[in-house]
Length: 490
Image (cartoon, rainbow, N blue to C red; front, side, top):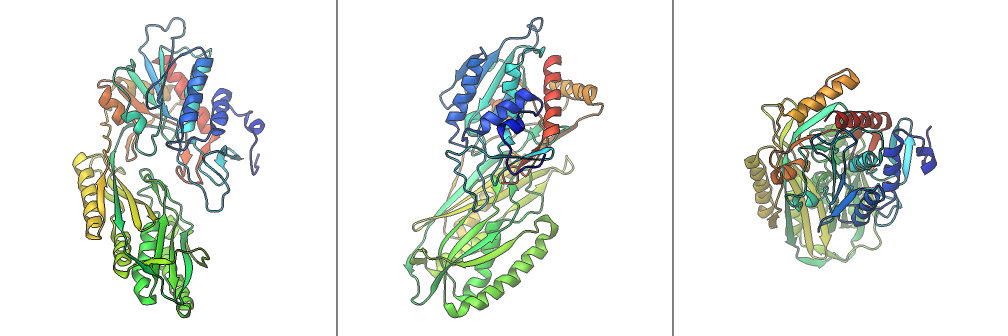
């Protein structure tokens, strides 16, 4: 089946039925990070409707307990863990309100997409799987705990505020991974570095006309999982345009915008500019040449880059003084972004990176958000301090977030052996054991519950944190088979 939009009835035939049922229902509830309270309440209500013990803590995390199946009472307590919030990204022109509209699901062959927005399979599939386990009557599992956290995507707030002593589990299965056949046993830590700068303003030059310059067409992606994929960063590219062409054409900057999630590589960015009419044609020609240069540099990694210059009727009449505009352009152009170092121990694993994520203009204030990741604490802080130094050189006031810890791999743990053994028995092939550069809640949970053994696995997903996010329907079926088999053998 290939349709523009899939109805609930279309998707109701998918297997495993229980998992997809809960995912479809969850997709009807707006649940962007920091707006997931209704979705968390729905999870709690589902647990109560299934006759389970339910507790919701002060920040909104939901803990649900289900007794063991008959005969499995002596098995270790196992926790299933997922986060209920999702990244809200949409294509320009998509008429979707993440505060009130349901996700418009779209099936294309054996893959599930949304329509012009992020899908929320990250981590809605994990939440749905946990609820389906709670609803099951035929899985021979031991005592279960389900932990559904809030606000993972914008700072792991739920996991950070989880109180110690609430969970009893020996094993924790994090259901927030994105590659079938991979078992994640470690992840990077991270920290946010944000900055503000007050801009001196003056009236736009008389006779100049306002335009909007857009940098668009890039893939974007998860700033941990795709940071080494060679994709373009719209903010850095915009900085290149402003720094290179600004003085040449007398561009006057009124506002900049781009990116909207600290953990997503920015796909689009824009500048409101005032330009002398006599310069517009030559500026457009220079833009075309610079676009060609950037497209050539990106190549097949990110072939869709486009610059668009269009008149803007409602532009601010005040523009930034030239020195301030030059400073901001200089930062965007020179800011560290991307992979800083690869792991010397695990081939193909990024060890340290930084993401130039967001720029916004609020009156005479410019705000910039970045994030840094590393599996080495000292390297994470060094990268954050280097970004801060660049910001300070360009006149910004800088703040660092609290950060979150990494998750140390324990490849010889009993749980790792259990899951890999079950996978080989069920699928006839070994799992790939790995650590990832993205952040997972396991690091924070492990700090509060030392000795708890943890692993993470999930189905195949692609382009998470972008409007192209999609998930493999057959892979979700295999993910479910593995989850059930692990619970029955734990």
